[in-house]
Length: 532
Image: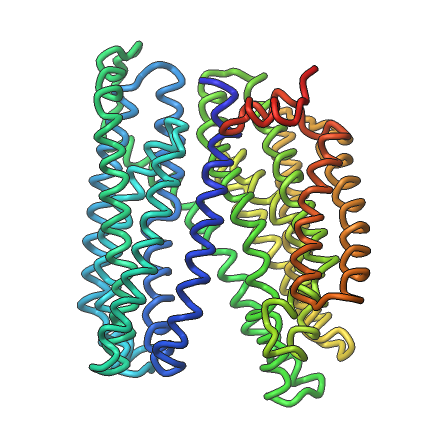
């Protein structure tokens, strides 16, 4: 067990997450051009159902596996850690069989209940096999995360998404002459092909590591054996709250769907105006918050096994180190992303949506508010990882649920003010994450004794990000006098990256020793000459 593993793992997962997001963007845009709005209607009827079933079957179990494996390897019981993996694989295989058959054979009934087009059945059945292969892949990912080896997880994510995009788009084009329902089904089947390829990829990596894994099992320090039923029950006990927690964020999105349009109409907007404002929030502004979320989610995933191992071995100092460093890393990543999105909200919107300039400009104010909330979202995810690692997985679920209650109140009140309108929903989201952050911080301090130094954890990232924001604002407005929005925005973003990095190094917000824990970190330190 080394302190190196948490930070390096977070970076590996973060890079993979960004690549996956880029692939995802390259999938949706050309797909819409290939199959049009009608075909996208078939595709979008199937995909949310697939995501729901996938969330229910896999979102919490990899976290549970990672924690149980990490706890056992921390005390040298490698054979029992491997047994946790084998049992969880069987559990996830069973869940995969049930959910894939449910979607495949139940597709006509699901479409009927949703009052969707009957042609969407083809897309549902095409995507159903993915529900068999993704859970098996999740078992491998949870096991490797428990060993604090994030490379197999990251590799399988990239492989899965790459084949999903390439095969999905290729099949959509190939089947287009036979009708939109088959083209949409071809696009949906990309998820199943990607899952198969991702599973093959992570299985190959498992085979390469198998000799070392089995050797560790033979050399286990402890031969303590837990009944299979107890292991499976522990997996379920850990997984259920995590799954519920994963479902709360989509629920918060549905809160907006239920409240915003109706509330706007009540204040005097027409139905078309209200729908347009809601589209600016949900379709234009909200997706941009996913970028910092991808990075901080990787921190949370890496924290769970690191914290769990320290907690199991009663290494309080290492536990507090990981917790403190995790919070600081979330701030180091979240602050510049948030400030950059706030300062360049309108230019970024115009860059991404040049054909919808009026809507892009109007959505910029909502993006600024959501960007502020993304700081608290970064902290919520990280603090949740810490609490899950020490076996307090119910607490962040309750705290996020309380945040959702706050969101309902704030959203309802503020969207009823005509001058605020849809920006009230953005403020409600920010208030929800702020509430959950405060409550999670209190819980982390209570159960870990972690007391993060204010200047190092919060002060230096805030000062560096604000200074960066001022410079970026100036660079954009100066460049925009001579260059167009696209060039000015891209140059400003690049300037922001370099300025923030320089400032955080100058203020010693991150040390040379911490940089060395990055992949190729020693070379980075040598190039920057941080050590004299």
